Figure 1 (spheres, rainbow, N blue to C red):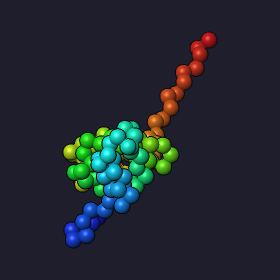
Figure 2 (figure 1 turned 90 degrees about the vertical axis):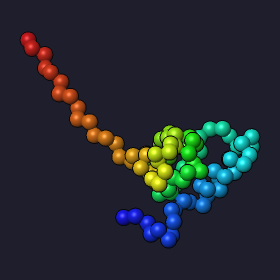
Figure 3 (figure 1 turned 90 degrees about the horizontal axis):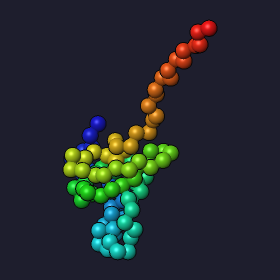
Length: 95
């Protein structure tokens, strides 16, 4: 279900503030990736080229924001569930 057009995209205020501070004065803030807890925020064109770490509930996943990601939410790029891989059956010894 998409958001109403007149409301505009949702971006967490703290996220916008931290990204703008980093862009204004790069020497004050660390060069490392920005940690993001707000998975529901939408990726805007201003975020392109940034390296971010998106929280998946347990760890952080590194993601480089590209132009194709505009309009998607951060949560789409950090899966929260572990992929199930069935174990191989061990072959018994033949005597």
